[in-house]
Image (tube, rainbow, N blue to C red; front, side, top):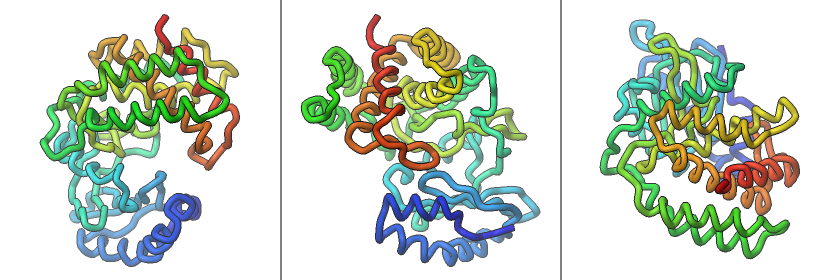
Length: 311
């Protein structure tokens, strides 16, 4: 058992957050100790982490197996506990306790195996789609609305198209802009995961699969198709190619399982791909192990954007 801060996690926090990240990391051991006492828990496993939060397996009251999650104060994680509270364990891990001032939660413990470990691509997309359908419930009033981001999306697309080299073909940018203008400003008040991908879906005991790490947005459920398809495109690279037919098949399997319109899912996914392609040009791409530079990941974003353009 350990309460030590994982080194890769510490490095990523400092690289991204700078001095404020260093201060938070210095306070983190004391914060964890305080939360363990507050919720009457003891560690019983090795700490793990994502990009923003550290997760410590713990035994809670009456021996209940949980995880203590403590996150760096980040806008993307403000509404994570709100989403868990709405779902109340329906398709996602249960929220047992929350401390919003400390960006901490006590959550149901799932298994370490993720949907990324499943070899059958159709099964991956079908499971994700079924979960997406279950998570798509009316959003509470306090959640941020994706429609409020549409103006910023359009402005950034136009700026990137004008400034960044190599240029992305005009028809790909035009397709993304059309999605923002036609779908982005008129979205339902439906609760979305916001970061639905294979590694955010874990095997569990209470249900076969449960979602973790939601961002908690209100908007079009088809929006989540983009994040999921990006992770599948990376998985396809293990075969040495990312055929257009495979991307479209994966997207359609997800849309059908989620009860979504295939065309709407395709358009959102194409917008995601264009945004990723521009992000790669401007900032470099980042994988789970660190930055990769402007290389094959940027080319992958271009390929996905082209594959998902109107046929």
